[in-house]
Length: 58
Image (tube, rainbow, N blue to C red; front, top):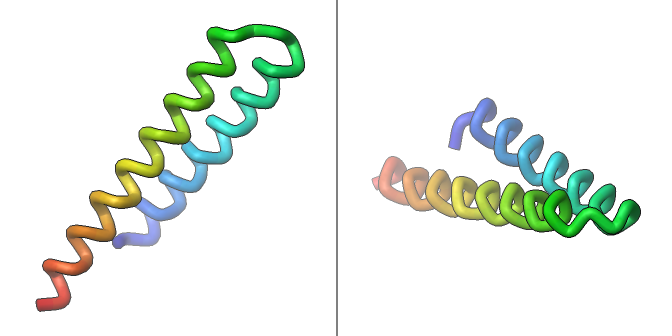
């Protein structure tokens, strides 16, 4: 996995956590859900990159 991808995925995850926290604090369920979505997207991208790495090693 490239360093740029790792940084991008981590940034998306942290942004999602911030959105989720802000949504909870303000009672904004839409923003909270968007934060969850961003975190899930980040996790899927990270998993995809790890799978690519496995095949690159062979």
